[in-house]
Amino acid sequence: MKKGNVFMYWLLMISLIFLAVIVIFAVNFLKITKEFDELKTTTEKQNKEYETEISNLKQKVTLLAEHVTIENENKNIEEAKKNPVGIPVSGQATIISEPKEDETDPEEPEEQQSFWAQYSYEEKDPHTDPVSFEDGLMNPYTLEISVNKGAKIIAAGNGVVSEISTDDIYGYIVKVNHQNGYVTVYRYSEAPKVNQGDEVLKGQMLFEVTKNKGTLAYHILYENTYINPFDMIEISG
Image 1 (cartoon, rainbow, N blue to C red):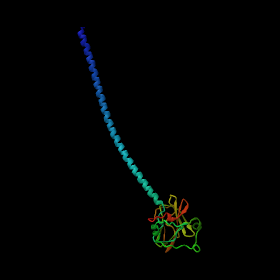
Image 2 (image 1 turned 180 degrees about the vertical axis):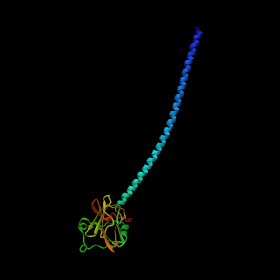
Image 3 (image 1 turned 90 degrees about the vertical axis):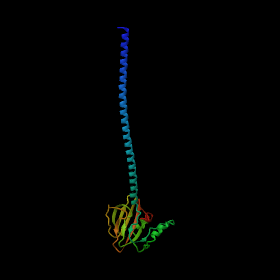
Image 4 (image 1 turned 60 degrees about the horizontal axis):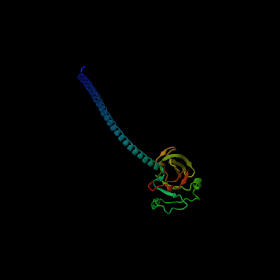
């Protein structure tokens, strides 16, 4: 074979090899480019899905936080309703005897003084009026209220009727456990309108006054210790 022909042969072979390499490279490049575009599209789609999911999660967290806040506020409201701050009677009433402290409080708000000023006071005579052992020794804070026909003796706060029993002095005893350390005691002569175990709401009737006149003895305990009802009763109650 002539040298010229050999040279042309190898030149053709090299050209073919180079062309094949270029074709292979171009095919692989196109394939890689396609895969990259597909990956980019998939990634962008996933990112949008993630962004949507994150946005939804943020909304859920916000709604959950608002729900928790509302639940906490409602819980605080419900807990506040358990505090026996209400006046235990509705209708016309007269304070017979007021719980006495060792010393009067000179800083008592004028509003509270004027509020209770609407009631007249009739001090009990210890020589003629019966005094139970509980009233005389264990409980220095008895609030006695004279109630007239048509009045109602009502729960001072939300709670559960924990006890109904008889009482030698007043007739019946109804105890309401407010499930927050407070227990209110209502002592009156007519049969109660509630049963032991009943859940009661603030303002719910415990006794109905059907006699021309009766006497309610009202007590408040906190952690099994008697306290002055005036320390709890709110003017707005």
